[in-house]
Length: 283
Image (tube, rainbow, N blue to C red):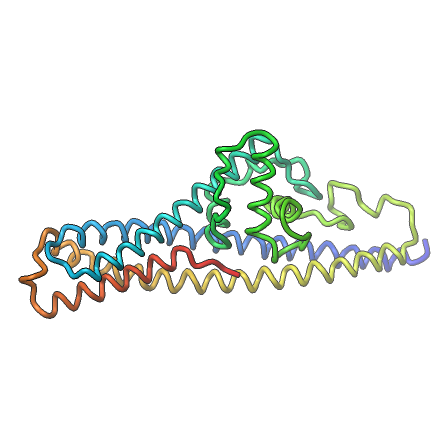
């Protein structure tokens, strides 16, 4: 058949690019999960420090001001977790299926709630003002899609904003299936009538788009890794001082020495920095 070899080569290139994209997506998901784990560990350390500082008598007013900001950061992080859980629950209840290719027919239930939370806390915060749990049926599904769209639009397959982008993200919960790939479980151009040259051209053009999307994911992965490294560095530093920190429980700030007061001041500032990192989102 005329240009059959050209079509075969183009489809192989396309298949390789899809596999490469999926590997990059898996890598991104992995680092998001590691960042989320570091952040949940950070919450525990922050709360431990809060308890100690709150037990100290006669602390400066700025301590209370700073920890007021810390409390807001903790609340924002918890709100994002809660909203992601509700988006997950609403999607599962609505029977959302991941569309396309090898992932066809796989429900979002195959994606662990913690995976959803790791993605959510990495890329965005819940700022809608309306809890998904307060909605029901189609409204809940629409809210979940819209939130996912606002959170994840801008990387991977660009399909606009709102529900369309939310559905695009859901399609990324497992290996993606682009329309031309030879391994697609969906409709494949291989089985369609058409000129081999046209099929080859479309396969190469789509492979280029997949390559661009993979490069974006790799950039995101590097940014997430850097954010985790910065968070982990500060978290480890605080944890290494845990024994000294706990030694100030129920202390009286007024009778502490200069070095101890300086240590507590630095501790309060570092705790605020760590709390801010909890809600630092990747653009």
